[in-house]
Image (tube, rainbow over all chains, first blue to last red; front, side, top):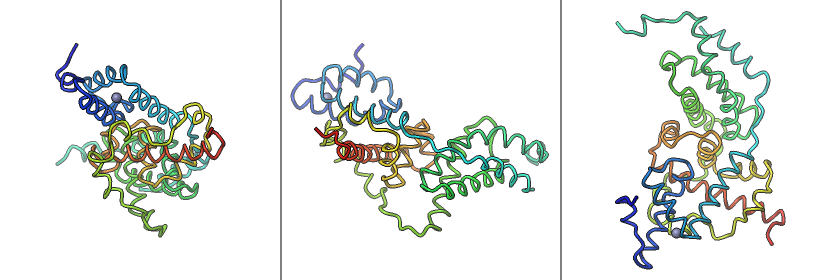
Length: 93
Length: 197
Ligand SMILES: [Zn+2]
């Protein structure tokens, strides 16, 4: 299924290719964060199937996000915090 | 005559609702406070202050709406308005000045995303939590904030825009810059640990 969006970025020349990669770089964060539109996602997927450098950029950016979500330690909440919040609220009229 | 005066809650009801709806956010909220202040006592104070404010304005909080985003917004405002003032640290750089350039010169082809140095997949994966935390903590607070909100807490761009009081375009550009900085820091750590072969 070809959308208008992908047609606009058809690779026709060396210059056209540059534009595609630029566009991919611009929406990379959107794709990683699940914020891309269906058209953007479709365009992105078909581009990285053929472009090694954008494919690699995508892998790296995904890795970076997963490092934060998977490896960053959450600090432990002090035991007394919840109790002291409740106590202060009780005092509040 | 308003609806709200009609269904005024008793203190017991209000306290019960407050605890049931807002206290479950305590852990992520404390975590966020700690990542902003980088100090356990300060994080503790900031979280308490946030909950007291939330309690005072609880009548304005609509049941079933996003309690987490609401609390994060209050905390972030407290941090900026009161906390930053108290800790007489000068603001390093105003990133709003530079982030407007995002669409013009920052993203140039794939080079805009992949930094010049190579982030070796295997080596960075070997980094453990402490190094990731150090790299994150070394970033300016505005950058740290967007990374925590997006990658750790999973807020959408729209929610982040509301929490931070900035347009979605600014969320995007700040996040982009923050990730580039973080990538550089992680690469530095990877190199210093001898992964640079
Ligand atoms: Zn490409």
